[in-house]
Amino acid sequence: MLPPSDPPSPAALHHSAFFIPPPPDVPAQFVYVRIPLQPRQRVDPLHQREDEIDQALHAQGIGTVLGWGDSLGERRADGSRVAAYLRIDINVSDLAAARTTLQQLLPTLEAPAGTEIHYTLQGVRLQDRATATGWLLEQPVP
Image 1 (cartoon, rainbow, N blue to C red):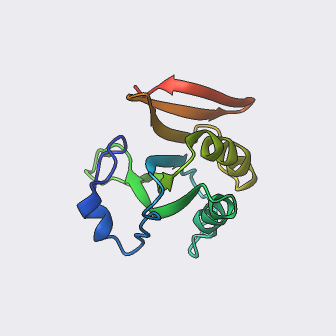
Image 2: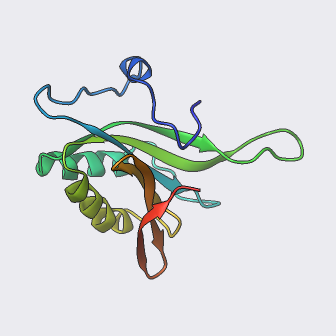
């Protein structure tokens, strides 16, 4: 599994069961969303959240969901690791519009405070982070 801050390689994406290539005439930028998993959180076995994000991006012609999966948390005393985040990998053609769409959409999909949108802007890795009162924009990635 990839560390949460590293985008998958193109080769790894092509081996994903969920890979959808971007249109050939539109340069794509990689974005990923990290949604903290809460204890006893409602399970989404049909991945409706990811589907709704994909539909919203497609409707505006600005992106597509590439895939999703769990990111593991810290190792427990017994050596086990449980899922701490849901990660959604996205290709976008308009970063500003995609960020705005995600910032508006994620709260309606029950994404809690602590949800992060990761992207690169002018060669700098940044994140927008949801708080109880709104979004903190263009935060450096620790």
